[in-house]
Image (cartoon, rainbow, N blue to C red; front, side, top):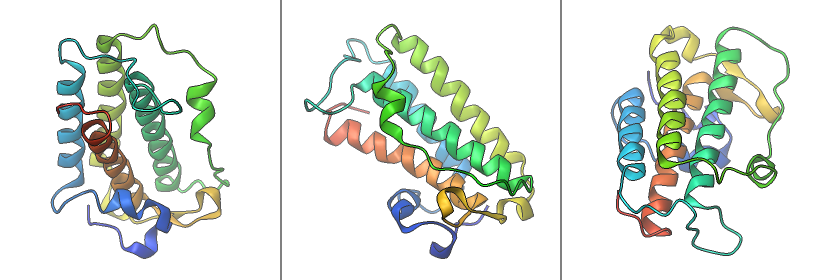
Amino acid sequence: MKRPLISEYNEYYHRYVTNVQAGDVIECMQSNLESYINLLSKPNLDLDYKYGPDKWTVRECIIHLCDSDKIFAYRALRISRGDETPLTGFEQDPYIESNDFSHLSAEDLIAIIKTTLNSTMTMFRLMRLEDTEKIGFPSNSLVSVRALAYMSAGHAIHHLNLFKDRYGLEL
């Protein structure tokens, strides 16, 4: 699948799309998954650590990543299948703030992220090229299916970078 043109997505997502280096976006997603499994497999990983008072814990950040990935994938599925029903936006904070994830272990998070990212990768890998070029309008903003694939992969990279730079975690 080709890299999307900048005209295929809202400029807000440019930072995610540009996180994906040259190469296959599915391979990038696979590499991201392996990085997250390695991170979550580290002994003594403090899932409750957060780098600031109003920031998410490691655990919450993983849940956010998976929630966002499911939303990117849902949008891509609908657009690729020709569903023109309006797609609304979503507000990420209530997904975390109104729930308690403290009971989830690192093993639980690995299972969640594996299931989520493997499903996303399979969906994009099996799409016909012409379906990845279809356009939809979530949140009244134009986006192509292939842009959603790159946004998904780039969003995962964004959080890997945050784990390294802000949380001080080794990947």
